[in-house]
Structures are given as structure tokens and as C-alpha cells.
Image 1 (cartoon, rainbow, N blue to C red):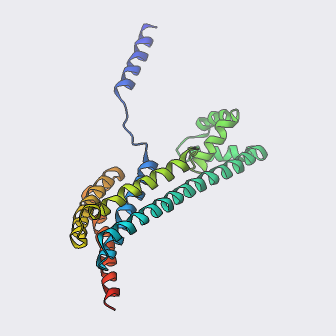
Image 2: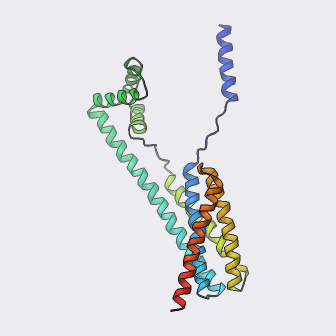
Image 3: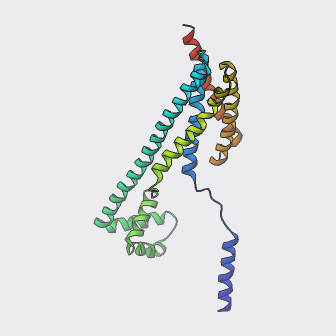
Length: 245
């Protein structure tokens, strides 16, 4: 009895010492990446294009802020609709799976056995699991949703959270290339300052994005900066070409 208590205590201590560190905010990080990357790139390209058309700093700033506002609303709405669509899909499939459990329970139980056998379990091992799930309808439904369909139950606040995160991230990213036009009257100097500031921000953001997504940070930084530079260069060159027509 004493040995059993000691074993349980040792197991508890081992669990306390071994605390796994897993990143669990993937959806939020994805929303931030979407918002900031577009926020840095689109207003940057717009400002470069207007600068190439010899617009004043005030005009570039006004147009840029209008674009940031419209872009944040559009991106936020897109995030909301995407999350709402995912939730609607989940609940439709959940209802369909519940109907199958109610109408053809033996078929659904056989599917549990098939799923567990794919992990190397034999009939004598997965049999008790199947019986336990059949006696617990709620757990049965959750098991089928997760392991048969590969669907996780969505957070009911996910749609609003996604919309707010993407919109705010877009605004933060969009203010970076526009900030020089707030303080530098000369549009040419403001554009050069914007290029330096935004490319630095793109490199930093790309590096951080690479760290969070598991990609090579330096490669991610270079790719992000190159995409932003190409977009702004295309907009600037197009403005110059139209101006010379």
C-alpha cells in the first residue's frame, strides 16, 4: 500500500516537472499575419504609386488613410465571413453525423472500429472502446466529428475575434508606410523614408512570421520584403508610365 502511494506521488511529480510547451494560438497568429502583411503591402504600393504621379504628401496621406480604413473593413468582414462559414459547416456536419448515429448506429460503430484499427488496435483492444462510446452518445458524436471528419468544434466567438484581429492588424500595418507622409512635406523625401521604414518593417515582420510558422526566419523575412518591394515598384512604375502618356 505504501509502495502504491509512493508510485502515485512519483508520477504526480513527474507530471509537474514535465510541462509541455505547445503553441495554441495558431488561428490568432494567422489572422495577424494576414492583416499585417496586407496592411504593409497595399498602402505601401498605393503611396508609392501616388508619389510617382507627383501627388503631394497631404494627398498621399489622405488617400492612404482612406484605403487603410476601407481595407480594414473589407479584410475584417472577410475574416468574419470565413470563420462564420467554417462554423456553419461544422454544425451542418454535426447534425448529419447525429442523424446517422440515430438511424444506423451499427454502421457508425463499425466505422469507429475501422478508425481504431488504422492505429494498430485489434478487436480485443478496440471492442471495449466502441462499447463505451456507444454508451455515451455525446462522446460518440464528438469522436466521430474529430476522428472521422477531422473537424474541431469552433469557438463561438471566433468570427468576431477574427474580424477584429485582422482589421486591427491591417490598420497597424497600413500606418507604417504612411507615417513618413505625416511628418515630411516633400513627397520625394517622404517616399524614400517610407521605403526604408516599410522594408525594415517587412523584414522584421517576415522574420517573426517565420519563427511562428516554423519556416526559416531569414528566408521568410527576405520573401516578405521582396513581395512588398515588387508591389510598390509596380505601382510606382505604372504611375510614372501613365503620367508620361
